[in-house]
Length: 73
Image (cartoon, rainbow, N blue to C red):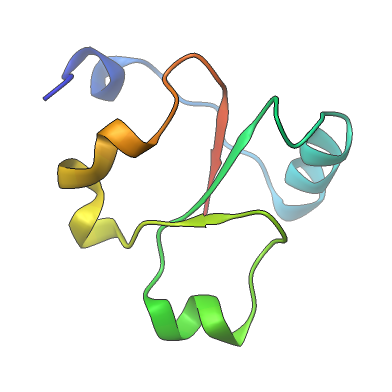
């Protein structure tokens, strides 16, 4: 497991700031990560968001590009 990433401070955004951050970048330049449950994701999600439910995150970190910023919700 890559522990350093969990010790790096993360910036918090409110919904409006997140919208602006995402809209200012190409979809190839940022990872949008939805950590909710599949049913919540199916009810509605940010277009292009990758679903990795929070309980699965530690086992699926290899699916996230460590060189790109991530917006997690």
